[in-house]
Length: 455
Image (cartoon, rainbow, N blue to C red; front, side):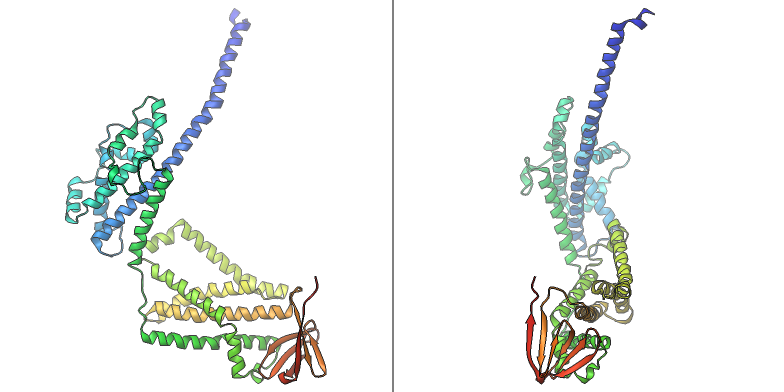
Protein backbone atom coordinates (compact mmCIF):
# COMPACT_ATOMS: atom_id res chain seq x y z
CA UNK A 1 0.00 0.00 0.00
CA UNK A 2 2.85 2.33 0.86
CA UNK A 3 4.41 1.73 -2.57
CA UNK A 4 1.42 3.32 -4.21
CA UNK A 5 2.31 6.60 -2.53
CA UNK A 6 6.09 6.23 -2.77
CA UNK A 7 7.35 9.13 -4.92
CA UNK A 8 10.70 7.49 -5.66
CA UNK A 9 9.02 4.33 -6.92
CA UNK A 10 6.74 6.31 -9.21
CA UNK A 11 9.68 8.37 -10.49
CA UNK A 12 11.55 5.17 -11.36
CA UNK A 13 8.51 3.79 -13.20
CA UNK A 14 8.13 7.00 -15.21
CA UNK A 15 11.82 6.99 -16.10
CA UNK A 16 11.58 3.45 -17.44
CA UNK A 17 8.43 4.34 -19.38
CA UNK A 18 10.19 7.33 -20.93
CA UNK A 19 13.13 5.17 -21.99
CA UNK A 20 10.75 2.63 -23.58
CA UNK A 21 8.94 5.42 -25.39
CA UNK A 22 12.22 6.80 -26.73
CA UNK A 23 13.21 3.33 -27.90
CA UNK A 24 9.88 2.85 -29.69
CA UNK A 25 9.89 6.31 -31.26
CA UNK A 26 13.51 6.23 -32.44
CA UNK A 27 14.29 2.57 -33.10
CA UNK A 28 11.03 1.63 -34.86
CA UNK A 29 11.46 4.11 -37.77
CA UNK A 30 15.09 3.02 -38.16
CA UNK A 31 14.07 -0.63 -38.38
CA UNK A 32 11.32 0.28 -40.83
CA UNK A 33 13.79 2.22 -42.99
CA UNK A 34 16.14 -0.75 -42.93
CA UNK A 35 13.47 -3.10 -44.23
CA UNK A 36 12.39 -0.56 -46.87
CA UNK A 37 16.00 -0.19 -48.03
CA UNK A 38 16.46 -3.95 -48.25
CA UNK A 39 13.20 -4.30 -50.17
CA UNK A 40 14.31 -1.64 -52.68
CA UNK A 41 17.66 -3.33 -53.17
CA UNK A 42 15.90 -6.66 -53.53
CA UNK A 43 13.81 -5.25 -56.41
CA UNK A 44 17.00 -3.77 -57.88
CA UNK A 45 18.77 -7.15 -58.00
CA UNK A 46 15.66 -8.99 -59.14
CA UNK A 47 15.77 -6.83 -62.26
CA UNK A 48 19.38 -7.88 -62.84
CA UNK A 49 18.50 -11.57 -62.36
CA UNK A 50 15.63 -11.16 -64.83
CA UNK A 51 17.90 -9.69 -67.51
CA UNK A 52 20.48 -12.41 -66.90
CA UNK A 53 17.90 -15.19 -67.34
CA UNK A 54 16.35 -13.48 -70.39
CA UNK A 55 19.73 -13.11 -72.10
CA UNK A 56 20.58 -16.76 -71.41
CA UNK A 57 17.22 -17.94 -72.76
CA UNK A 58 17.53 -15.91 -75.98
CA UNK A 59 21.08 -17.10 -76.58
CA UNK A 60 20.10 -20.75 -76.03
CA UNK A 61 17.03 -20.43 -78.26
CA UNK A 62 19.07 -18.78 -81.03
CA UNK A 63 21.62 -21.59 -80.90
CA UNK A 64 18.93 -24.27 -81.25
CA UNK A 65 16.00 -22.81 -83.21
CA UNK A 66 18.11 -21.02 -85.88
CA UNK A 67 15.98 -17.90 -86.26
CA UNK A 68 12.53 -19.27 -85.46
CA UNK A 69 10.32 -17.06 -83.35
CA UNK A 70 10.36 -17.71 -79.63
CA UNK A 71 7.34 -19.66 -78.43
CA UNK A 72 7.22 -19.73 -74.64
CA UNK A 73 4.52 -22.43 -74.73
CA UNK A 74 6.53 -24.82 -76.89
CA UNK A 75 8.28 -28.01 -75.62
CA UNK A 76 11.61 -26.46 -76.61
CA UNK A 77 11.04 -23.50 -74.29
CA UNK A 78 10.17 -25.92 -71.48
CA UNK A 79 13.42 -27.81 -71.99
CA UNK A 80 15.48 -24.60 -72.09
CA UNK A 81 13.85 -23.35 -68.89
CA UNK A 82 14.56 -26.65 -67.15
CA UNK A 83 18.21 -26.45 -68.20
CA UNK A 84 18.43 -22.83 -67.01
CA UNK A 85 16.91 -23.73 -63.65
CA UNK A 86 19.38 -26.57 -63.16
CA UNK A 87 22.64 -24.95 -64.28
CA UNK A 88 22.09 -21.43 -62.97
CA UNK A 89 20.85 -22.45 -59.50
CA UNK A 90 23.35 -25.17 -58.63
CA UNK A 91 25.12 -22.86 -56.18
CA UNK A 92 21.77 -21.99 -54.58
CA UNK A 93 20.93 -25.63 -53.87
CA UNK A 94 24.46 -26.25 -52.60
CA UNK A 95 24.11 -23.53 -49.95
CA UNK A 96 24.09 -24.98 -46.44
CA UNK A 97 22.15 -22.17 -44.76
CA UNK A 98 20.87 -18.70 -45.65
CA UNK A 99 21.44 -15.90 -43.16
CA UNK A 100 18.57 -13.72 -41.96
CA UNK A 101 19.58 -10.70 -44.07
CA UNK A 102 20.43 -12.95 -47.01
CA UNK A 103 16.92 -14.40 -46.85
CA UNK A 104 15.44 -10.89 -47.22
CA UNK A 105 17.73 -9.68 -50.01
CA UNK A 106 17.93 -12.93 -52.03
CA UNK A 107 14.38 -14.01 -51.24
CA UNK A 108 13.81 -15.80 -54.57
CA UNK A 109 16.99 -17.83 -54.20
CA UNK A 110 16.03 -18.59 -50.60
CA UNK A 111 12.59 -19.80 -51.74
CA UNK A 112 14.24 -22.17 -54.23
CA UNK A 113 16.52 -23.43 -51.49
CA UNK A 114 13.59 -24.05 -49.11
CA UNK A 115 11.72 -26.01 -51.83
CA UNK A 116 14.83 -27.91 -52.96
CA UNK A 117 13.34 -31.27 -51.96
CA UNK A 118 9.88 -30.73 -53.46
CA UNK A 119 10.43 -28.59 -56.55
CA UNK A 120 13.73 -29.07 -58.29
CA UNK A 121 14.75 -29.13 -61.98
CA UNK A 122 15.32 -32.50 -63.62
CA UNK A 123 19.11 -32.93 -63.57
CA UNK A 124 19.26 -35.89 -65.96
CA UNK A 125 17.02 -34.22 -68.54
CA UNK A 126 18.90 -30.91 -68.27
CA UNK A 127 22.30 -32.52 -68.80
CA UNK A 128 21.12 -34.58 -71.77
CA UNK A 129 19.48 -31.54 -73.36
CA UNK A 130 22.62 -29.41 -72.91
CA UNK A 131 24.81 -32.15 -74.34
CA UNK A 132 22.51 -32.75 -77.31
CA UNK A 133 22.55 -29.09 -78.39
CA UNK A 134 26.04 -28.18 -77.14
CA UNK A 135 24.70 -25.61 -74.67
CA UNK A 136 27.15 -26.31 -71.84
CA UNK A 137 29.45 -23.30 -72.61
CA UNK A 138 26.49 -20.91 -72.71
CA UNK A 139 24.87 -22.28 -69.54
CA UNK A 140 28.15 -22.31 -67.61
CA UNK A 141 28.86 -18.72 -68.62
CA UNK A 142 25.48 -17.54 -67.38
CA UNK A 143 25.72 -19.66 -64.23
CA UNK A 144 28.88 -17.73 -63.43
CA UNK A 145 26.99 -14.47 -64.15
CA UNK A 146 24.18 -15.61 -61.85
CA UNK A 147 26.56 -16.39 -58.98
CA UNK A 148 28.31 -13.07 -59.57
CA UNK A 149 25.05 -11.15 -59.13
CA UNK A 150 24.39 -13.09 -55.91
CA UNK A 151 27.89 -12.12 -54.75
CA UNK A 152 27.29 -8.44 -55.54
CA UNK A 153 24.01 -8.52 -53.61
CA UNK A 154 25.53 -10.27 -50.59
CA UNK A 155 28.30 -7.64 -50.41
CA UNK A 156 25.68 -5.02 -49.53
CA UNK A 157 24.63 -6.83 -46.35
CA UNK A 158 28.15 -7.77 -45.26
CA UNK A 159 28.36 -5.07 -42.54
CA UNK A 160 24.92 -5.95 -41.18
CA UNK A 161 25.89 -9.62 -40.94
CA UNK A 162 29.10 -8.75 -39.07
CA UNK A 163 27.18 -6.53 -36.62
CA UNK A 164 24.71 -9.35 -35.92
CA UNK A 165 27.53 -11.92 -35.64
CA UNK A 166 26.17 -13.91 -38.58
CA UNK A 167 28.34 -15.77 -41.12
CA UNK A 168 29.34 -13.47 -43.99
CA UNK A 169 27.39 -14.76 -47.01
CA UNK A 170 29.56 -12.95 -49.55
CA UNK A 171 32.42 -15.36 -48.78
CA UNK A 172 30.34 -18.28 -50.04
CA UNK A 173 29.22 -16.53 -53.23
CA UNK A 174 32.74 -15.30 -53.90
CA UNK A 175 33.94 -18.92 -53.94
CA UNK A 176 31.35 -19.75 -56.63
CA UNK A 177 32.44 -17.01 -59.07
CA UNK A 178 35.23 -17.39 -61.64
CA UNK A 179 36.34 -13.76 -61.77
CA UNK A 180 38.97 -14.44 -64.44
CA UNK A 181 36.29 -15.28 -67.01
CA UNK A 182 34.07 -12.26 -66.33
CA UNK A 183 33.96 -9.71 -69.16
CA UNK A 184 34.80 -6.06 -68.70
CA UNK A 185 33.62 -4.12 -66.67
CA UNK A 186 32.46 -6.82 -64.24
CA UNK A 187 34.73 -7.44 -61.29
CA UNK A 188 35.10 -7.54 -57.54
CA UNK A 189 35.03 -3.72 -57.18
CA UNK A 190 32.38 -2.95 -59.81
CA UNK A 191 29.54 -0.71 -58.67
CA UNK A 192 26.02 -2.14 -58.59
CA UNK A 193 24.60 0.34 -61.11
CA UNK A 194 27.32 -0.64 -63.61
CA UNK A 195 26.35 -4.30 -63.17
CA UNK A 196 22.71 -3.45 -63.79
CA UNK A 197 23.59 -1.42 -66.88
CA UNK A 198 25.73 -4.27 -68.26
CA UNK A 199 23.05 -6.96 -67.98
CA UNK A 200 20.32 -4.62 -69.24
CA UNK A 201 22.35 -3.77 -72.35
CA UNK A 202 23.29 -7.44 -72.84
CA UNK A 203 19.66 -8.59 -72.80
CA UNK A 204 18.58 -5.65 -74.98
CA UNK A 205 21.29 -6.32 -77.57
CA UNK A 206 20.51 -10.04 -77.80
CA UNK A 207 16.78 -9.36 -78.17
CA UNK A 208 17.40 -6.66 -80.79
CA UNK A 209 19.69 -8.84 -82.90
CA UNK A 210 17.23 -11.73 -82.71
CA UNK A 211 14.28 -9.51 -83.67
CA UNK A 212 16.09 -7.85 -86.57
CA UNK A 213 16.67 -11.23 -88.19
CA UNK A 214 12.89 -11.77 -88.18
CA UNK A 215 11.68 -8.35 -89.32
CA UNK A 216 9.10 -8.43 -92.09
CA UNK A 217 10.78 -7.16 -95.24
CA UNK A 218 9.33 -5.61 -98.39
CA UNK A 219 10.68 -7.07 -101.62
CA UNK A 220 10.85 -3.95 -103.79
CA UNK A 221 11.38 -4.70 -107.47
CA UNK A 222 12.06 -2.37 -110.40
CA UNK A 223 8.35 -2.24 -111.16
CA UNK A 224 7.70 -1.16 -107.58
CA UNK A 225 10.17 1.70 -107.97
CA UNK A 226 8.52 2.89 -111.17
CA UNK A 227 5.16 2.67 -109.42
CA UNK A 228 6.58 4.78 -106.62
CA UNK A 229 7.66 7.45 -109.11
CA UNK A 230 4.17 7.42 -110.62
CA UNK A 231 2.72 7.68 -107.13
CA UNK A 232 4.80 10.78 -106.44
CA UNK A 233 3.41 12.31 -109.63
CA UNK A 234 -0.11 11.49 -108.51
CA UNK A 235 0.59 13.19 -105.21
CA UNK A 236 1.06 16.47 -107.08
CA UNK A 237 -2.57 16.20 -108.17
CA UNK A 238 -3.62 15.42 -104.63
CA UNK A 239 -1.85 18.53 -103.39
CA UNK A 240 -3.87 20.59 -105.85
CA UNK A 241 -6.84 20.19 -103.54
CA UNK A 242 -5.51 23.31 -101.83
CA UNK A 243 -6.70 25.44 -104.76
CA UNK A 244 -10.09 23.72 -104.73
CA UNK A 245 -10.52 24.46 -100.99
CA UNK A 246 -9.52 28.11 -101.36
CA UNK A 247 -11.79 28.57 -104.38
CA UNK A 248 -14.73 26.91 -102.68
CA UNK A 249 -14.35 28.88 -99.45
CA UNK A 250 -13.82 32.33 -100.98
CA UNK A 251 -16.26 31.74 -103.85
CA UNK A 252 -14.19 32.27 -106.98
CA UNK A 253 -14.11 29.92 -110.01
CA UNK A 254 -10.49 28.81 -109.82
CA UNK A 255 -10.69 26.89 -113.08
CA UNK A 256 -11.07 30.23 -114.93
CA UNK A 257 -7.86 31.72 -113.56
CA UNK A 258 -5.51 28.86 -112.78
CA UNK A 259 -3.62 27.29 -115.64
CA UNK A 260 -1.66 24.05 -115.61
CA UNK A 261 1.55 25.86 -114.65
CA UNK A 262 -0.21 27.62 -111.77
CA UNK A 263 -1.72 24.38 -110.60
CA UNK A 264 1.65 22.59 -110.58
CA UNK A 265 3.42 25.57 -108.99
CA UNK A 266 0.86 25.63 -106.20
CA UNK A 267 1.36 21.91 -105.66
CA UNK A 268 5.16 22.13 -105.73
CA UNK A 269 4.99 24.83 -103.07
CA UNK A 270 3.85 22.16 -100.60
CA UNK A 271 5.76 19.21 -102.00
CA UNK A 272 8.55 19.15 -99.46
CA UNK A 273 6.55 19.21 -96.25
CA UNK A 274 3.68 17.09 -97.51
CA UNK A 275 5.85 14.39 -99.07
CA UNK A 276 7.98 14.31 -95.95
CA UNK A 277 4.86 13.90 -93.81
CA UNK A 278 3.50 11.14 -96.02
CA UNK A 279 6.86 9.37 -96.16
CA UNK A 280 7.26 9.50 -92.38
CA UNK A 281 3.74 8.18 -91.94
CA UNK A 282 4.40 5.29 -94.32
CA UNK A 283 7.74 4.47 -92.71
CA UNK A 284 6.32 4.57 -89.19
CA UNK A 285 3.39 2.40 -90.21
CA UNK A 286 5.68 -0.10 -91.90
CA UNK A 287 7.97 -0.13 -88.86
CA UNK A 288 5.03 -1.03 -86.64
CA UNK A 289 3.92 -3.84 -88.96
CA UNK A 290 7.41 -5.13 -89.72
CA UNK A 291 8.45 -5.41 -86.08
CA UNK A 292 5.23 -7.08 -84.99
CA UNK A 293 5.88 -10.66 -83.84
CA UNK A 294 9.56 -10.35 -84.75
CA UNK A 295 10.70 -11.63 -81.36
CA UNK A 296 8.10 -14.00 -80.00
CA UNK A 297 4.95 -15.76 -81.14
CA UNK A 298 3.23 -14.29 -78.09
CA UNK A 299 4.71 -10.81 -78.62
CA UNK A 300 1.55 -9.16 -79.93
CA UNK A 301 -0.59 -10.83 -77.29
CA UNK A 302 1.71 -9.73 -74.46
CA UNK A 303 2.00 -6.20 -75.82
CA UNK A 304 -1.76 -5.93 -76.28
CA UNK A 305 -2.57 -6.86 -72.71
CA UNK A 306 0.36 -5.14 -71.02
CA UNK A 307 -0.32 -2.16 -68.79
CA UNK A 308 1.71 0.23 -70.94
CA UNK A 309 -0.09 -0.91 -74.11
CA UNK A 310 -3.48 -0.40 -72.50
CA UNK A 311 -2.50 3.07 -71.33
CA UNK A 312 -1.19 3.95 -74.81
CA UNK A 313 -4.36 2.60 -76.43
CA UNK A 314 -6.60 4.61 -74.11
CA UNK A 315 -4.53 7.74 -74.71
CA UNK A 316 -4.64 7.21 -78.48
CA UNK A 317 -8.42 6.84 -78.54
CA UNK A 318 -8.99 9.76 -76.19
CA UNK A 319 -6.72 11.96 -78.32
CA UNK A 320 -8.40 10.89 -81.58
CA UNK A 321 -11.96 11.32 -80.29
CA UNK A 322 -11.00 14.64 -78.69
CA UNK A 323 -9.60 15.84 -82.04
CA UNK A 324 -12.81 14.81 -83.86
CA UNK A 325 -14.86 16.82 -81.36
CA UNK A 326 -12.50 19.83 -81.16
CA UNK A 327 -12.23 20.47 -84.93
CA UNK A 328 -15.92 21.24 -85.64
CA UNK A 329 -16.35 22.88 -82.23
CA UNK A 330 -13.56 25.37 -82.94
CA UNK A 331 -15.08 26.23 -86.33
CA UNK A 332 -18.70 26.68 -85.28
CA UNK A 333 -18.04 28.33 -81.90
CA UNK A 334 -14.84 30.29 -82.53
CA UNK A 335 -14.99 30.74 -86.29
CA UNK A 336 -11.49 29.37 -86.93
CA UNK A 337 -10.12 26.19 -88.41
CA UNK A 338 -8.20 24.26 -85.76
CA UNK A 339 -5.68 22.67 -88.12
CA UNK A 340 -3.97 20.61 -85.42
CA UNK A 341 -7.25 19.02 -84.28
CA UNK A 342 -8.32 18.50 -87.91
CA UNK A 343 -5.05 16.77 -88.76
CA UNK A 344 -5.29 14.65 -85.60
CA UNK A 345 -8.84 13.60 -86.50
CA UNK A 346 -7.84 12.69 -90.06
CA UNK A 347 -4.87 10.66 -88.83
CA UNK A 348 -7.01 8.88 -86.23
CA UNK A 349 -9.64 7.88 -88.79
CA UNK A 350 -7.10 7.08 -91.49
CA UNK A 351 -5.14 4.63 -89.37
CA UNK A 352 -8.20 2.43 -88.91
CA UNK A 353 -9.37 2.67 -92.52
CA UNK A 354 -5.97 2.08 -94.13
CA UNK A 355 -5.06 -0.82 -91.85
CA UNK A 356 -8.27 -2.71 -92.44
CA UNK A 357 -8.46 -1.90 -96.17
CA UNK A 358 -4.88 -3.04 -96.84
CA UNK A 359 -5.55 -6.40 -95.19
CA UNK A 360 -9.00 -6.94 -96.71
CA UNK A 361 -8.41 -5.95 -100.34
CA UNK A 362 -4.72 -6.50 -101.20
CA UNK A 363 -2.52 -9.55 -101.58
CA UNK A 364 0.49 -7.73 -100.14
CA UNK A 365 -0.90 -5.68 -97.24
CA UNK A 366 2.45 -4.11 -96.31
CA UNK A 367 3.09 -2.59 -99.74
CA UNK A 368 -0.53 -1.49 -99.96
CA UNK A 369 -0.38 0.16 -96.55
CA UNK A 370 2.82 2.07 -97.34
CA UNK A 371 1.45 3.33 -100.67
CA UNK A 372 -2.00 4.26 -99.38
CA UNK A 373 -0.63 5.93 -96.26
CA UNK A 374 1.61 8.18 -98.36
CA UNK A 375 -1.36 9.30 -100.45
CA UNK A 376 -3.77 9.65 -97.56
CA UNK A 377 -1.48 11.48 -95.15
CA UNK A 378 -0.25 13.76 -97.94
CA UNK A 379 -3.88 14.59 -98.65
CA UNK A 380 -4.54 15.20 -94.94
CA UNK A 381 -1.52 17.52 -94.63
CA UNK A 382 -2.53 19.42 -97.78
CA UNK A 383 -6.13 19.82 -96.63
CA UNK A 384 -5.20 21.10 -93.18
CA UNK A 385 -2.55 23.33 -94.77
CA UNK A 386 -5.26 24.92 -96.95
CA UNK A 387 -7.40 25.53 -93.86
CA UNK A 388 -4.38 27.06 -92.14
CA UNK A 389 -3.95 29.44 -95.07
CA UNK A 390 -7.61 30.43 -94.79
CA UNK A 391 -7.00 31.25 -91.12
CA UNK A 392 -4.00 33.37 -92.08
CA UNK A 393 -6.02 35.28 -94.68
CA UNK A 394 -9.00 35.83 -92.37
CA UNK A 395 -7.04 36.64 -89.23
CA UNK A 396 -3.56 37.94 -90.11
CA UNK A 397 -1.06 38.19 -87.31
CA UNK A 398 -0.74 41.67 -85.85
CA UNK A 399 3.05 41.68 -85.96
CA UNK A 400 3.48 40.27 -89.47
CA UNK A 401 4.46 42.51 -92.43
CA UNK A 402 1.64 43.61 -94.75
CA UNK A 403 1.81 44.01 -98.50
CA UNK A 404 0.51 46.86 -100.63
CA UNK A 405 -0.20 46.15 -104.32
CA UNK A 406 0.15 49.11 -106.67
CA UNK A 407 -1.84 48.80 -109.92
CA UNK A 408 -2.60 51.32 -112.61
CA UNK A 409 -5.10 53.66 -111.03
CA UNK A 410 -5.63 51.60 -107.82
CA UNK A 411 -3.87 50.68 -104.64
CA UNK A 412 -4.75 47.63 -102.51
CA UNK A 413 -3.59 47.43 -98.92
CA UNK A 414 -3.51 43.98 -97.33
CA UNK A 415 -5.08 45.45 -94.22
CA UNK A 416 -8.27 45.97 -96.24
CA UNK A 417 -7.90 43.36 -98.96
CA UNK A 418 -7.12 39.66 -98.78
CA UNK A 419 -4.51 38.69 -101.34
CA UNK A 420 -5.77 35.22 -102.15
CA UNK A 421 -3.52 34.17 -104.98
CA UNK A 422 -0.99 35.23 -107.62
CA UNK A 423 -1.26 33.30 -110.88
CA UNK A 424 0.61 33.63 -114.15
CA UNK A 425 -1.97 36.08 -115.57
CA UNK A 426 -4.08 37.24 -112.62
CA UNK A 427 -4.04 38.58 -109.09
CA UNK A 428 -7.08 37.58 -107.02
CA UNK A 429 -8.13 39.87 -104.15
CA UNK A 430 -11.09 39.95 -101.74
CA UNK A 431 -12.33 42.83 -99.63
CA UNK A 432 -12.37 42.03 -95.93
CA UNK A 433 -15.47 44.06 -95.16
CA UNK A 434 -17.73 43.68 -98.20
CA UNK A 435 -16.32 40.28 -99.38
CA UNK A 436 -16.11 41.81 -102.88
CA UNK A 437 -13.93 39.70 -105.17
CA UNK A 438 -11.64 41.46 -107.66
CA UNK A 439 -9.45 39.84 -110.28
CA UNK A 440 -6.79 42.09 -111.82
CA UNK A 441 -4.47 41.31 -114.69
CA UNK A 442 -0.96 40.50 -113.54
CA UNK A 443 0.54 42.75 -116.21
CA UNK A 444 -1.17 45.77 -114.62
CA UNK A 445 0.72 45.26 -111.36
CA UNK A 446 3.32 47.99 -111.01
CA UNK A 447 4.82 47.33 -107.61
CA UNK A 448 4.50 45.33 -104.41
CA UNK A 449 5.38 47.23 -101.25
CA UNK A 450 5.94 45.61 -97.87
CA UNK A 451 5.12 47.54 -94.69
CA UNK A 452 6.53 46.34 -91.39
CA UNK A 453 4.46 47.40 -88.35
CA UNK A 454 6.34 49.48 -85.80
CA UNK A 455 6.46 48.11 -82.25
